[in-house]
Amino acid sequence: MAPPLARTMKQGIREGGVSAISSSLTETYIPQFALALKATPTHISWLTAIPSLLSPLAQLLGNKLMSTFTRKQLVTVTAYIQALFFIPLALIGWGISSQFIQTYALPLLLISYTLIMSVAAIHSPAWFSWMGDLIPEKQRGTYFSRRHKAMGIASMAIILGGLALDYYQTQGIALMVFSGIFIFAACARIYSAHLLSTQYEPPYNKKKSAIPYSLWQFLKRKNAMHTFVLYVALYNLAMYIASPFFPVYMRQDLGLSYTWITLISLASSLFYLLALPYIGIFSDKYGNLRLFYIASILYTLNPLLWLLFTNPFILLAVQLVGGIAQAASIIGITNYLLNTVPSQERAIVSTYINTLAGGGIFIGSLIGGYAMTYHPPWLSAITYTFIISIIGRCAITFLGVRHMREREKVKKLPRTLKLSLIHPIRSFQGEIHFLKGLKR
Image (cartoon, rainbow, N blue to C red; front, side, top):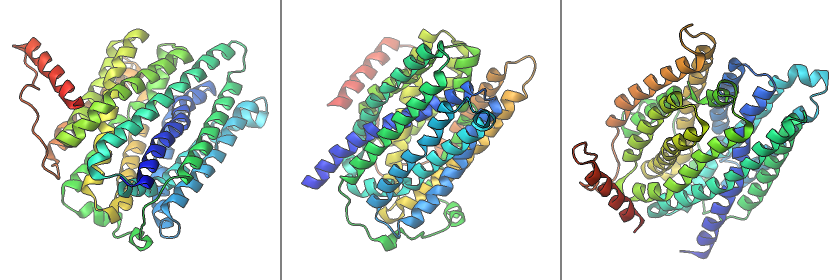
């Protein structure tokens, strides 16, 4: 492996960890911040829907900018700009005593968060194209599992924010603690941008970054990628009927503290971490479509388990399902795209996929907000919303995944890896041997 490549791959793993701190703080505490500002379910749905709709449009801008700037320049500069938009978030908490801030706090939160997510989206196609040319194909599963592992470990720092919020909440200054959290997220993003600026970028022909076909032309293609794109978009729609409201459920329905909410979020990250080495090697050996099966089934099961169990200690264990599903989904989708899409089309194809996925998230979030507000009197809002999401996830899994095809030949799964009700102990032993074999 060439020295610049080896050094950049190591830097990429480190940068992933730093950027994960910023992302985790944002994703974990923005909904909690909104609830502290007295947000309704409708506000929460818009907080997910609007950034999800505008971010893919920002990716289209990012594709156009690739014909003017290098991928490294685009990714680095936008990371610095993103850090600046954390400042308005911090000002909301510090200036909450102002009548103006109190009146417009939620709109300011929505605007600031949308700008943060949109600027991040601008550099997404460039980063995806950059990494696709940089990481050797046979090492992608292992490399991205290592990078996501570093991201998972680093994101555990968010527990400090939960502890601080619970401690200072009793002193009436929790909103100021939120401000401190967002300032720290900005600092992490600045350091991430610095690390990106030190990484190697392979040669790239800017002329190839011109958009080769429109979104409509892309959708008219009847191939495996067409099916994959529709599946991703529809599954995101079904998922986000429920996903934005887990923080609402934990905070308002279950009455959990900030520390418990953070711990439960971290449990998912921990299980995600533990699963990544196996998922990455599984992807390299047995393909990515099987990962879609795993992710789809587990994501469908997840909200059902949340309805069945309300004890926070049990919910920590339930996060095993979400963690494995997240690992299978991220590695599966990333590698499927890298393996299927030609190098010169990766940026625009990833943009179109994210555009359609963002549309699905937008519609799903609005459906969820409507369900949370207008639910049958004999069902709680959260139960009604989760049931709708479960039904949607089941239907899309059944209709979508079975129609996709793997591009390359992959190994068959061992015969021992089969569940058996007649011989459950033998089945369990087979799975243990299979997991051990993956690590060899």
